[in-house]
Length: 261
Image (cartoon, rainbow, N blue to C red; front, side, top):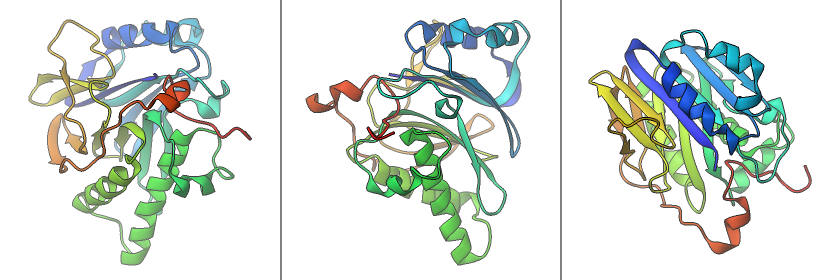
């Protein structure tokens, strides 16, 4: 399956050694790579629909120090789907009060009809992009009702509600940045790990990247981090995902494209 990497820290750190190991996995996950660096509400996204190992741009980029406080990275393995820039992660969208939301996904949405309406409006074809469009729409609906932006606590509650619903019968590993906080979710056991480097620095990865003390992310609940600290933790409400035999043909990737696309 595809792989995720994320950083959330109060103190900026150099991440080149982690990224070199992470992107080396693109020998298998060869259908696209991406990175997003965050500067408050602004997201700088770099991505290509090619293997990270074959990217001259990324090779030169990683020769220079990459120093961040919040970032995410992704490598894509597509069992179904075309190698297009628009299908590479991460994805970003602003809500109706100008907040920037950035998402990367590892998993598959097998059945969630509410995503279908986004097929005609999304830039690419992945269900991962549709997840972001759906979640931001839900935030927008509530903000329209209240006629104001949601508070931090309200954003967490809404994200928990809708991510829990999305997890039913679907594989849903997510990293999401909302301009202030990083949301982390997994409902597939032992497919997302975290490294606590200090009280104010935490890293996330699909696989441990070093011989440091990586631990499985607590799963079946939404976690929210700011400045490397856990600020919100949801109840264990998500549905655990198990690999049903009939879905094996899709389980190597983080998105499913409808056959008509």
